[in-house]
Length: 78
Image (cartoon, rainbow, N blue to C red; front, side, top):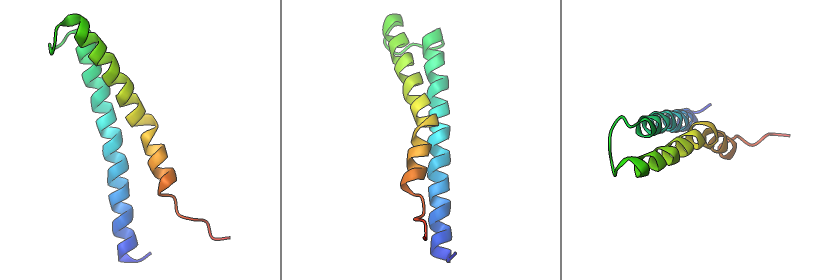
């Protein structure tokens, strides 16, 4: 593995890890909004914003790293 390949692999690992971290943060913020921990636009709207944040965060945490890894997968030498 060349130094350029190593640097690219580190950048991709950081991107996947940060995607998972942001997904977890979105999920936590969504649960806080659903529970009423802080107020953005009033209670009925805050719950819907929280639900959207939880869904987006779950997608970012679970699905996006898999999609990125599949896109960046090394080609197989046959």
